[in-house]
Length: 151
Image: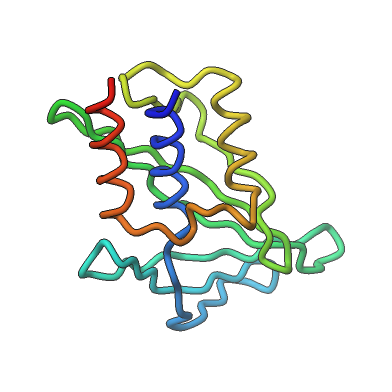
């Protein structure tokens, strides 16, 4: 159970501990606007440029934002890279995530997520006060190693 919590912390860490700055705005049409943003993370030397898309309702009112992020999981020298679609409201509060059809996330032991795992992930991502937001990569790796030593 401890190891499972640490894996959740690790995933949350990657999804929420990036800081960002707006690079420039690209307007594709009146209804769809994208913003290039630079994601910075203390665990990485290089920054990552991503596209934050505006979401509009049928009356052409801004209702939120969405962005594709990569979920990377590596075990036993094999890495799995999946796209996760994240959605926020106009105030920047997390709403939900979606996975492309046929994509499933994996746990630390290589087993696929079950319904309860996806629900727990949503609960963690929805927690604005999650302590995982302040963890560094080294904090998480150290805790993972300690939990593996306990098992």
